[in-house]
Length: 438
Image (cartoon, rainbow, N blue to C red; front, side, top):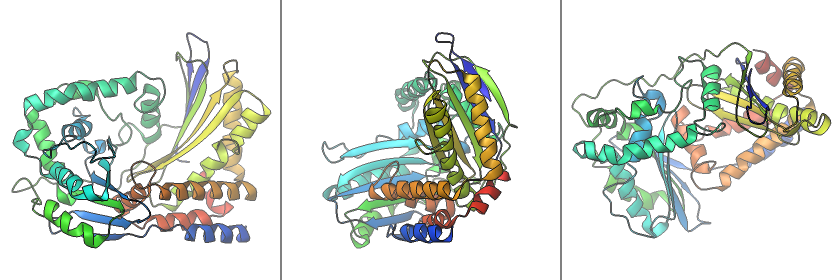
């Protein structure tokens, strides 16, 4: 555990790093899970591009995303930031910008992949497909020193802004959680970027990165919304079909590292100083990867432990002891591993030692005795309801497009979510207890 003592407010921040650690109700949850469905069709072009189309004619728009296996975990030491740099370099394509054609747009670099998102009216589908295709076919010779210079400062300043925060993505506390949760040698146990690396990346190195990663066989194109597969396929064939499978005669061998052992730091606490108005307790547990049953069972455990308003930590520290303002549960499942987090936001005048002691007491008791039937039922309902809400949104983060993409990327099956929902719905106390005690 790490406790940050605030020099300004004298309020500590605590981080905890921990290693991986009824029939009628099951039937009711299982019936609800079966009502959640995301119809889709998949096909693959001759150059290796995988395409997923999910029709939804209740909307006039189409969400279009290009996912590329070019996440930060593929970077070599000394080049941390290449993936994020490439995301910005290919943010602008050779397709001229037309105001009003794109309703929403964004891009993101994650550990396993980079994504480019756009929401467009149906009549702009050919326009956005041309732009997305250009990201796989952008001329390597155009990656000049000038193009890099134009984007380098943007990439560095964007990440510097994250680093300046005490909490959240890219912050020092977030990086510390990753390093201790997954282990310093794991591809996930590191920051997304090091600005000193980005400052020295050359145009030749970026051309090499693009040639190695931005390939049709390493990409997924996802369309969700007011489009049929018969409408989409000719346009996709037109724009993506001519792209060559490789940019070099003999493409380099790539390791996807589909199995990588997690080596988290043994359970411990740390105490650090932070300039924040109130202390926090932040914890992380490494879990198995997406698709593993125990990853889903531990997500349920995390809900029981830390969910706002209903979790054990909330009932203990907020409702009973009145030393915290809220608690939060968060679960992530990715290709190599997953993680669950529990967060407690303490009151400004709260004794952090008391909060830490209560936190560990609740964790140990839950791991030892498991959840009650009522707690498990509530956790299932919350996770299934949250999933149903994701399925209502077309694209970007927390959407049905993301659900389909994660299944295809991590398991080679856009419908992998079905098994996940079924496991959550049918999970028994014994399943959760076994996963917690490993």
